[in-house]
Length: 173
Image 1: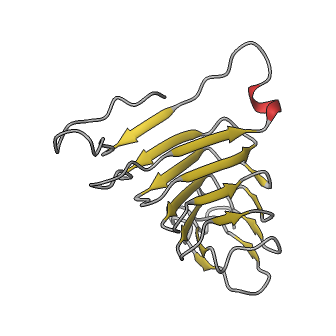
Image 2 (image 1 turned 180 degrees about the horizontal axis):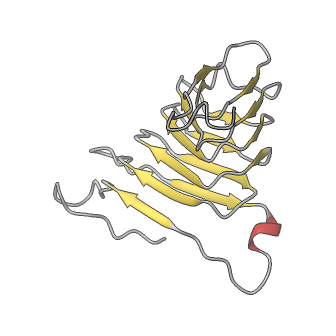
């Protein structure tokens, strides 16, 4: 009946991508999709469900990564860690519904390319003791067309390695 599930929270799923082509669908809970540069591919199609869904992505390896071509809809948060030597370009031109994109604990540069929405950008724990880690955001032209666009930016535990430990960076935004 209408009230059978009253007071019951939807069950969240963890959906892990494989090296094969994946078509994964979230459900009513706050689902988490898990991917790496070896499992996320242009053949993948991800769809979030009714909850606030998250994609956790990590790159690594001895060469720069260009992650492009995948499709994602209804996944609101993207947590991206760039540990690939030479950095990671994460092309979001196939993504709709993103509201928050996080550069999370990266040791190398991250380029966010082709964003289709003016999502909140979070840079968290990215500076290393000897080098700066850059985050570059490139929106599709239609997102920034017009007279003004507002960008929400959150910096969490981001420091300038040229400063004394514990001194926050005042880098240009």
